[in-house]
Length: 91
Image 1 (spheres, rainbow, N blue to C red):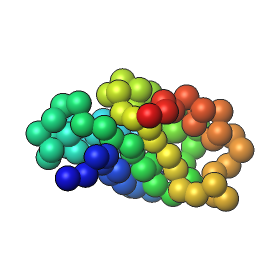
Image 2: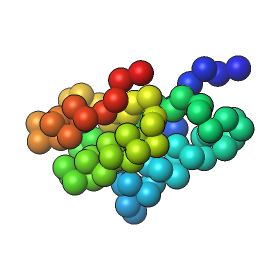
Image 3: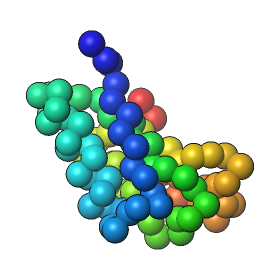
Image 4: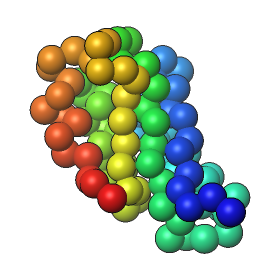
């Protein structure tokens, strides 16, 4: 049994970062049957996103009490995105 779910958020396909993030977290928990299931959202490729989308993703992660979130990859993550990512909870 997995101890953590890591759904991909596909940032390049976000229609609304907060809604997509929330749906992915809730879907992962529904599939396990546990509302407290630990989820780390993989937000997708960093280079097509903007700061407001990352802020919305982080807000949704915090609101749903996910264990964390990230973007791929460090090379394509613009300097302007890092302050928003610092709001991601750890563990």
